[in-house]
Image (cartoon, rainbow, N blue to C red; front, top):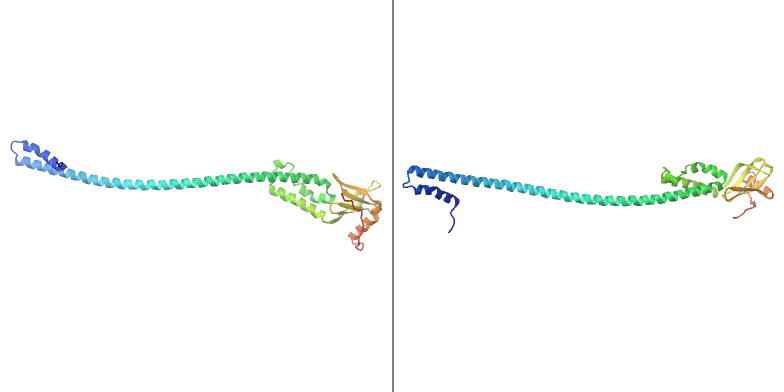
Length: 252
């Protein structure tokens, strides 16, 4: 048996009291009909309101679903961005650590070069010492606590080595004051043959030979070579014609 529709069931219920009366009247019939119509109107109104409410709820649900999807996309992008940033940060940290290690190694090497040059300074010829003194003054006294950059320190070391190499590849003649055989200081002409050998002669003809020692240059009188040394000096001063001059050389 099929169930009765809602509006029909309500109508039946409303009509039951009327049928139960002994005798229906036109007024009671009109009243019953009016109630039935009113009931139908209420049912129709409820249906419309439910349909409208459902449509509104469905629209709201669709909007919320769209917002949720948008948030999901943003979260995904944020995670990817964060992951990329973390990867870059890790790479930067690794690169920074690598550069720090390289810098530490270069700083140690620079300190060793500077220490070696300091030890070499007393063994350089006096003219060369005077020339590189400004560069030696730039060497930091404490490499571990200096604020001088590695680039400046290496540039300074390269400048010193360049001047030393230049002096070693040239014949240099200078005027110096040297103590001679009589114990008195005298002006002499000194000829440096690179960093290996040097010869000097005084206006009186006193001559000597210089060689680099363990801590400084060592000078030895050489009367037997005075004439040759004096001749070599005159040739370098363009006071004599160029020719081969035999000078004593000691190879160490």
